[in-house]
Length: 191
Image 1 (spheres, one colour):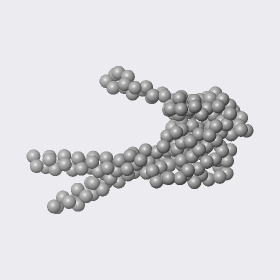
Image 2 (cartoon, one colour):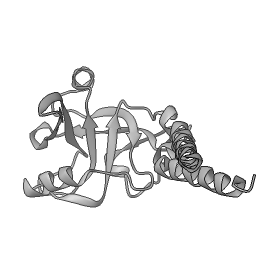
Image 3 (cartoon, helix red, strand yellow):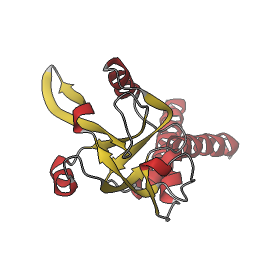
Image 4 (tube, rainbow, N blue to C red):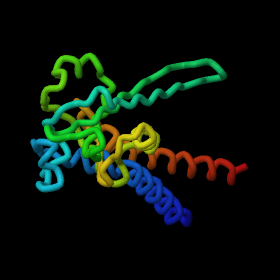
């Protein structure tokens, strides 16, 4: 029983690290609200939730695609392409800073609501909790393409609700890893 404090500390650290890794998901899981706004209103009005329906016009001509290829043992296992569209207000000009970028990985579903050049309302989750936001590669692609972004540009994941399993699963994974570490250490001590 003299190892009990060490075991408890190790388990606590594992759970804490798991919870820390899940901070954005925990914040999204606790957000049961819903907010609606026009893109033009952002910055002048605060949103009561990260679960939003934003109205604006998707600029297909300013699309950025990010392709991720997963390889295993030198073979391509999967290829996934995310599409990032600026969602802009009615008065938007091409050199204006974009306030909202919509991430789409369900393109057929987007086509159902897309109206060429017309305002559209898109529902999804704003990825603005903790360290979330627009990936650096995507920011660079917009800027290198000549499209400025607002300093506080928002990332809207179109049609993607938060994943509650991730929010509460990560701490348990941390506990499991800590328990496995303790078990391995104890096994080595007995030898």
